[in-house]
Length: 164
Image (cartoon, rainbow, N blue to C red; front, top):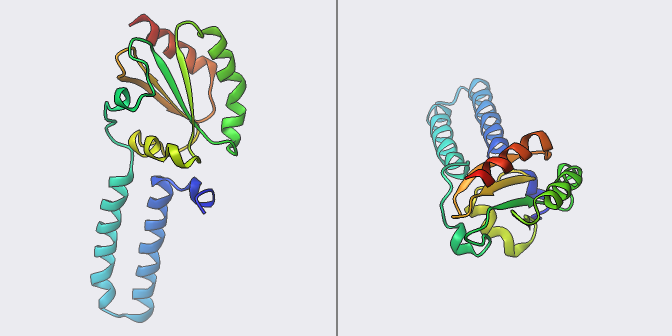
């Protein structure tokens, strides 16, 4: 079940909310029931608030306590899935970057489908795979990107990470 629902993120929930409100409006015009005049705004506001709470926001600095990031060394955390096509397409790029920066940067890969990684996925508000989060040597997030890894984007950010 979790693999089936793994593609749902806050954007798809927002789209589902819009579709639900459109169905409710259609039902109002079809039935002319005044009950829908009460239900439509309640569903809209409640759905928006719920989805906003699930959406990406400020990321906490708890990564140092999670044991993922060695303090004193810059780290890149890759949130990936073994059945994600963008993750598979990113493997060569990430492997090349890991070889290039192996002495300077620690690379951590987290499988979002594993049960024991659910807490990290929620904590860092990862909504799509692959997601790459760069942390400096003090454990602070400095850069985040999602989608297929591109050397022209990641390499300059890695250089910035190492220069600070």
